[in-house]
Image: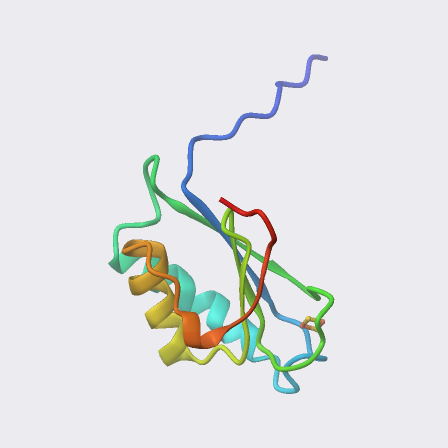
Length: 112
Ligand code: FES
């Protein structure tokens, strides 16, 4: 039996949300991850070639100051993400391309 090859439709950015309990004792990333889908849909960022993919992970290796969220390909890492900050990240960074500098704690060297 032949297994079809993997395929990926075009996308613009990928957001990874930590939903673990070490960086955020109440696992605040879980609610953020659900909210992220709503915000992406509201801003028209769920479908088409400029869409934003989202993923959740049990740990991003930071384990403090969470919830932690990372945006690629820029390699921008945000800390202490609240629902209000998530809304800013979606509208300012993901929609308009302006990084929310006051919430960045790390950035990938040599990122585009
Ligand atoms: S549990 Fe969130 S970074 Fe490790």
